Each structure stands twice: as structure tokens, then as C-alpha cells.
Length: 208
Image (tube, rainbow, N blue to C red):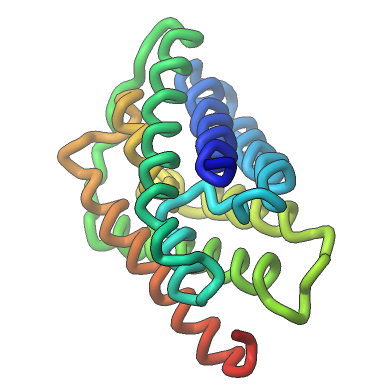
């Protein structure tokens, strides 16, 4: 139960930060910087308890990699998605308004963007937080947060820059994304997580 609570708390503050910076329309660089920082600190806070996935696609990737028991996958997903919904509702309350859903005009480009940066995120998580060679390192939270920040800057205008199904659900609740297009994030993000895990296992065959 402790693991699931930790996942809820970390995901909650990640999505809350997204809502509280994006809904008020804060200037360009502020949301990506704040979101990356929020993820970084929550990864440091929860890493020793749950592994700090804070992302259903990362949970799937870590499971395939062999560092998350299959029995924990669905409870992690439930905690993460519920946190995203709860944080979205609180963010709307704090901002005093919901957003205007982004219309993804180029579906293939959005699929590629979400896939690539979810792959990058999961790949960084696996190599910094789960690899034997990096056991006990002190930089994994920073690396993970900066990966999301980079993705938000790079392709946020193309796909919305979720790289996380729980974030996508929360963004849809806040009306930053459209529920009718959320499948783009679900398909691409889970595919990116799976590919990252397979790539890690190929590149690190002795790291079990």
C-alpha cells in the first residue's frame, strides 16, 4: 500500500503543477521548467518507496525490464490515473477555470512525438534508476525531470507533450486535451515504454 500511496502523491503533484502553470497561461518557458522540476523532486521523494514511476507507461516499461512485479502494475496504474484526475480537479479549482482543448491537427506527427519522448523518458529511467551500473547514483531524478522538460519544449506544440497516460487523462479533465484524441497519447506512450524496455534489455543483456 505504501508504494501506491507514494505513486499517487508524486503523480498528483506532477499533474497539479501542469494545471497550475498551463491553465493561467503563464509565459512560455515557465510551464516546462516547472513541470520538469516537479517531476524531478517527486522522483527523489518517492524513488526509495515505489521506484517513482509516476507514469503508467514507465511502470509497464519497468515491469518488462524486470524491476516491477506484474501484480503491482494495475494498482500502480490505478493510483497514477486517480492522482491525475484528482490533481486536475484541484488545479481547475485553484485556477478558477478550465482550459481550451488543444486540437491535434497532425495525428501522425503527434503519435511520433509522443512515442519518441516517452521512449526517451522510459529509456532514461531504466538506465539511470534501475541499471546495476548506476546503483546508488544521485542524479537519476534530475535526469528524468530534464527529459520531460526537454520533451515539453521540443514537441509540446505538436502533441501536447504528455509522455504519460496519467498526465493525458488529467489534461483532458482540465480540458487542455480532448478526450476524443486521448488515444493518441495512450497508444504512443505505452508503445514508447515497451520499446524502451526492449531496447534496454538488448543493450544490457547481463543486467537482470
